[in-house]
Image (cartoon, rainbow, N blue to C red):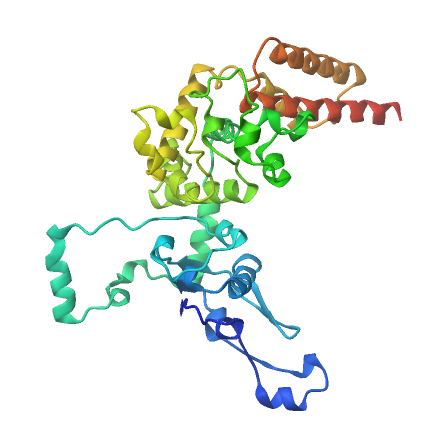
Length: 379
């Protein structure tokens, strides 16, 4: 089902209308029946030129996309799980509305159309002469019934993410949220704190000192990654691996899908010194290339630190994940001692970077868990 975005689109155009006869006779809102739009109940939904939809109607679209229901006059229509496809015009081309941030965040993958290669002009001539419509050219092999879609979804979710790759992704994600000048309190030194404060990002960043401004990946972005972004990235990496016939996600699966999932989610700080290097200047305008470069640089740092073999924080977390059943007071105190020694070691003479900040927060969490456990044992 396709909806065409246009500046006059109202919520009624998008969702449906109350029946006029019920509007006249109803004594209360629950007596009014709604003529819901048929597209709401379909499993594949296409919104053409969604950035031409007025802001108020975008909010209604957000509810349908994000929460799976439509609401009018206290009447609710529950929508099935659906695949959504949205197209947008160039924002600089005019005739468009500012897309609300919450709606943009609900879009899982962003792919920009590449230019047309003139060598294939004969294909356009064929389309014109034979009156071929794009939807008619969709191969039957990729048209799936509802039960097939559900089965594929279940199989994709079952694809495993191996521990070494998960740790590599953890390290990558840890690079971006930390912003030391954002707060005095250790836990709040994040870009989220800076964004919610209303203070200009450049003003806070100017107080940053003592770091290599080219090598520090955090300085290349103005934000970190949300939980929703991470879940989406993992799901699409699993999907790509499954369609390639693999039973676990590989590093290339993650690397290839990452730029399109994070395209509108990880915002570059174009004034960062990194982009002044002649080698990387083209990445100011090449968002896909920049995101893949970020991943590659993070992986190189991960390997340099030998994280696969030397990751004491991961070892401590795995120890706790095994459970506390049967752990004695002496063993718990021994683990607390190891945690405190590691905190002291990690904080000794080092400048704080994102991965180290997240490691220290993890150690604080472990310390609290064991301290609470000891209090429980003391009873």
